[in-house]
Length: 188
Image 1 (cartoon, rainbow, N blue to C red):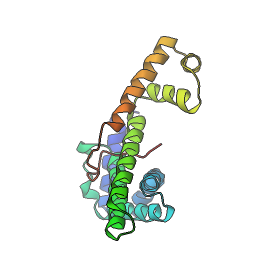
Image 2 (cartoon, rainbow, N blue to C red):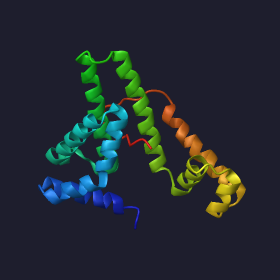
Image 3 (tube, rainbow, N blue to C red):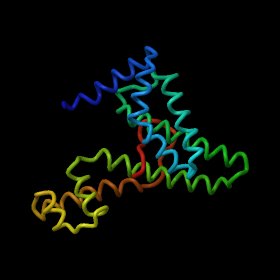
Image 4 (cartoon, rainbow, N blue to C red):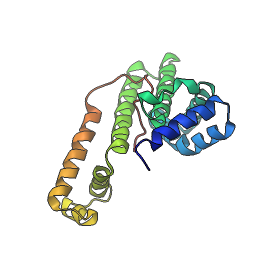
């Protein structure tokens, strides 16, 4: 697969949606539905709310495919950004309705934003770094064991882990705007 293949798929999907091809929406849902639902659930902490956000996001994509601009990033990022924006909007409406304090809502938004940035960083990082982090943190292997599994030197395994952690540390570099679609991903 060439480097341009995902971008080409994104452009083609946008065209199909713009032409009202229902099968394109189904394909898009199959590909990104769990991403949208998972991100919404992490922000809201509520299954029903996540279901609602998922419906809203795909309705928005269906009704406004022209808003996606492949020059500004991948379709996945745009859709994840929409999910985040819709979920945060629900949280803020809950504060407006008096269900929760604005401070509680903003803290939840900050935490969800950091988690979304961390997931986006992990899914965007090169596969060798992601594999090293997976072995070290999810499978609880030390760098020597990770090196053996990856078939690399111990120095290379340490380098990959260090770089992966440096990238991840940027997820918590303070609050960012949460409303612009296109920069958020799902939390792991």
